[in-house]
Length: 305
Image (tube, rainbow, N blue to C red; front, side):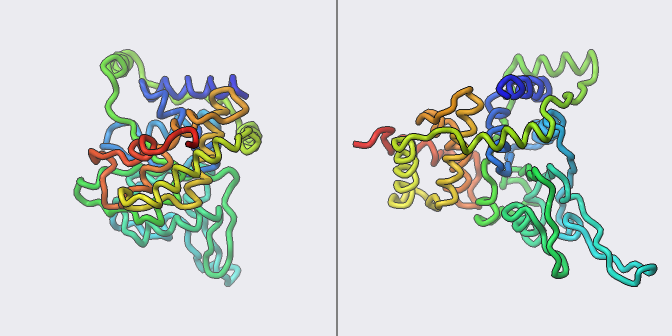
């Protein structure tokens, strides 16, 4: 399993150059059965990363371009009257895939954004009184443009909280961008081959909760979330859902690091991606000067006093 995951990271790194840390965070999110939000400027490789992950894991992939006129039915599907059977038949939308890329999610209206809430939380959708289960596994990877750009609607806190992790890619370093340009002049980049099939991936996912976590690490997580609730520095304190997300992400990170136990450094590695979008207001930019998750880690001792 570890070898396959390492091969998957390397394969994705050939598509999204110089971003191995962010790729590892993205896989951490999926291994922990979470949904991923990628926020960055246009053209930074958000869509390429999503497609490369889907190809490497062998997931059925659909992409929806979110726009201001997109309606919930465009994502979920719609019931159409069948003249032959004289009944309404439900035609599934692109949501019914193992991985949905919600591209530029904050360009759609809040009504359309909220259409994903039930799917992300319950892995099902309700249409005309009928509940339709979604595939297993099911992931939403959403991309978001910075809020200062025109035509964007801030995601409400309830929607942000459904995203297990949020990452940023940032500009590539000189060598990575040079390699990208050199490859562009020599040949076209092919999507990576499937390295882990769906059955194997589900098996790996089942191993994550079994990663050992000591009482000291649990207490460290509790001190972090409690400080966020007791301090006035944080607009939105961390909820119990965030506590569980931090623990599961730390377990997945430990697994990717070839360990069967969690250490405080695992918590620190995943905390910014798990907590930052929950701590700040939905109207705050991810590029704000203050980094609340780092401030939280600086304020809380790793070991109890």
